[in-house]
Length: 338
Image (tube, rainbow, N blue to C red):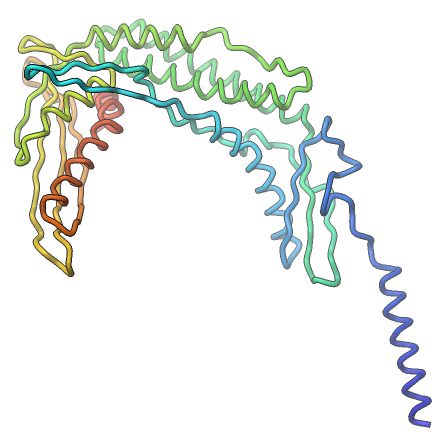
């Protein structure tokens, strides 16, 4: 009798298992492939999976956003190359391009209107899968709205640059207009991918023309250099190199501005097998009348197995910092940022 009961119980268990499989939702095509109901020519899609439904939805929307973020990252940086030649005590610079823009585009505005179209639970693995979709036409309209905003801000900056008598204020406004158009160019490239016609919406301003205007304005701004403190003896060379990289021509004693650099170095000694140095690099822009237009400083810290190597690494940091931060700092001075 017991064996008969066991057999009957086993049959019921098997029937329940089979009926559960029959009643369970089949795996949707989009979990491992294309979403048939949301064709690629009409929708942009992304999936996400997690142990609970809400997290799966959030990941799907996040992955949809990453599609745009990846495209932005690939097309958002322009490079700058500067060669410094020292001959007979004088320095000359050869630069291919002095503009370096890191574009920041907010993807949340671009994916506005995205939605979770489907969610499926894998009962075997206890995992939820979600499908996020965004209509390509909606994405295109979102991008065009952002481009209109950028064009409006660009026009304001260009008008401000033309109306300013202060050369630094004018430079700062023109530089912001150029940065905005780099941002717009990234959106334009993205729009050409989303738009099935592949045309996008060209800007009425040419980045090449704006670059030329900025280059001319930079060349008209002569900035002299001075050193307050330089314990290593290379700061003046690095400062002039960074100025050339930023597009500022070397000035003389009669320049309207003087860029003063200062380097303080503290030897922290030998600790745990390493030589440590701490530094503080600072610059200030001074007008001919003695007015300080702005200040900026950066903390530095390096270590090395040999003391000479630590000093060399510190000066490498000084050079990198000046080349990366000098131009933004000077343009900040024009707006009163300290």
